[in-house]
Each structure stands twice: as structure tokens, then as C-alpha cells.
Length: 334
Image (tube, rainbow, N blue to C red; front, side, top):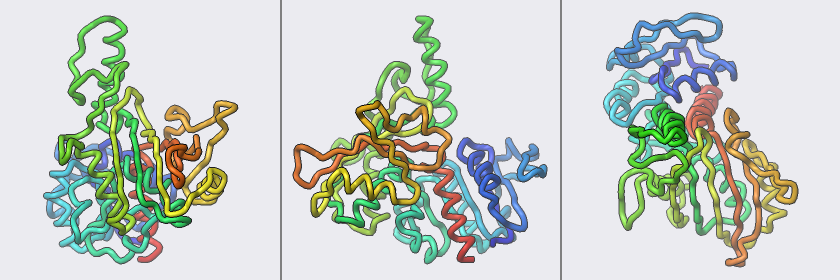
């Protein structure tokens, strides 16, 4: 058990869910502190039937803190988290800033818990679209090494923050009322639309969001030979990312074997009954911590290919839940 735990970015969308999960899962510590920007400092916050006061995030705010769980923009993570490490805290970071640093562990507890246990300083939590994909890959990869992944994501507007959801809701109303709306989170209208770009352009015409899935997957599995071909699309759904995933394995894995592997893996729920129209839906997976899988079928274009549909709450398992699970793992080892 840690003595003092600090949540950084306590008033943000993911930060609020982290706090909720710490309470729901009865995470134990002698003391909790909640840090945010100067704008939020001084406001009250309820946690475990007590009222706390939000403190301003400063470089000196980490004195006496043993564990930090942070969900902030990249620039804030880059500026302040080294101060937490310097103060002697273990740090779990939700931002994208530290993920590919060679000295930082990138962790999904179901896949590489030892990386968190052996880490010094900052432990990074992956991008939300990567997290659900690698959880789905893990039982298959253990049964027969995955050589190639082709993935298309259908990402919810909550992935772009509170403003992303506002753009969806307000933009949809404006569209139906035939009124103009100025989008703030997206470069194009998201209402009744699909935007095949998330992030800026990187190499070979792929976006930053897509390349995150490539590099993060290899780092989490510790295998640079895994080939990943991603396409990331923003769709007009409020919450939960969906993905179509096709994997090519060293030996063929039948749909029946895959279903058994998925069903027996912790954190995965299989909903797969095409005949009766049962498969994971974003509207039914929101607010859940699991990764949901359905439409499991053989890839008819490749002898060792398997295709399936994957849905997960990007604010929970894709962000907050994964961070809290890392914290629980560290607490057991502490």
C-alpha cells in the first residue's frame, strides 16, 4: 500500500473517472491529494465520503507523494512529471509524451505487468486505440505468435475531450435545424459524417494516431517484428472506440479456438451471435472496463488469418481503468 497518492489532472474528463475508479475499487492509501491547474485550485472535491480541496499543480506539489496518477496534456506531463520522479514518487502517466521514451515502461497489466514492476520513475499508459487492440491480441499471440495486424478504428468523439462530445451534440442539432455550427475540436463536421484523419501527417501518409498503434504495439509486446497496418477514423459516436481487426498468426487459429481463448482471458467479454444480431455495440459498452469482442470469423483471404470486431470504452480501459490497474499492480508489490 502507498502512503500518499496524488491524482494530477483531477478535474479533467479522464481524471474524474480515475478518481471514481479509485473509490469504486477501494484503492487503499493513507492519504489522497488532488492536483489541477490554478483555475481549479481551491475548489472542493468529494472522495470516499470526504471533502478534499483541489491543490494547484506546481513543481513543489509532489513532496511526500509516493504514487502519482496523471492525466494531462503532453506539455504539462513533460514539464511537471520529472519533478514528481525527483521527489521520489512512482508516476503513472496517461499523456502521450513519455510513451516511446526508451527509459519509460509502456504498460497494459494484462500483457506486460513485469514492465511496471521493474520500472523506475515514469510508467506510461498507451493510447486508447492501442490498448483495446493489444488486449485482444494477447491471448491469440500466446497461442500462436501474431505476425501481422490490419486494423481500422472507428473512434468516438470523447477521444477528443469534452469539446469533442460538445461538437457532436451541438453540431448534430445545428445540422438537423439547418443552422451553421463552428466546430472547435474537429477540422470537419462530425455530425452525420466520418473523418479519416486523427492526428497530424507522419511518414508514408499515415497519421500520428495510426503510427502510435504501430510503435506502441511493438513496445508493449517487446517484438519489433509485428507488422501493423492501421487506419484511424473519427465517427459520430459519443463514447467507446470500435475496431475491425484482422490478425495473421504463425499457425492458423480457428474461430472456435479464438472464441475459447478470448473467453478465458481476463478483461475480455465475448458477444458473438451473428444469427441473432448479438455483438458488441458502443452504446452498450460505455461505462464498462472490459474489452468486448464479436464477429469472430476466419479471414477468407489468408489461410492463417482471423478477423473480429472489438469495442471498448476509451475513457475507461482506454485510459483511466488501465492507469488504475497499473496502480493496483504497484500497490501489491509496494
